Image 1 (tube, rainbow, N blue to C red):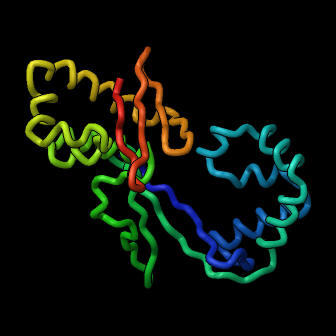
Image 2 (image 1 turned 60 degrees about the horizontal axis):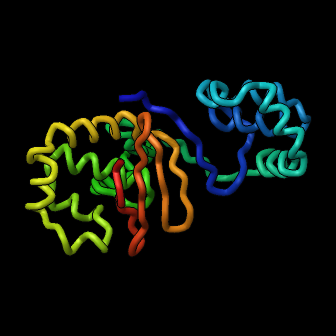
Length: 215
């Protein structure tokens, strides 16, 4: 499990000078307005700075002057509602968002979305979860329509627990170890390369992503 990471969401665009998050946003807006991009970079999180170097940040800001000035104008001197939230990452990259209400932290994420298929990555994680929990009926949701009439929950179970069980377990283990690999989307098709030579092919049907091929 990973630790809680605080994030900030502006409901209106803005902030006023103050303490805590408001003060940080005001300092950031001032740094952008003055084109002091080094100081602005210092206000970014360590995780961001681990991905984007200070030099790269400064260069990107200089190359996008109009956008920087607009952001600074939106941030500085304007009042807006500020929501402080937290995001907790667990399991196969699942996240749970929390918000503060009346001084108490409350869960804002839908806790019932166990088998999300809204994106290829979500579908892959959901597929692995269904396998781990032996929800063969749920695994059928990830089968493309062209194959759907040829299988059922019983056949799905036999495929993953029959003579090829060890091979399938190794495949799922490899998938889980590479679940955060980049996925390339092209319209209703997507693919993810993983391991030394494998590729997952995804297909979007009826608004849901499915797994067309695992290797």
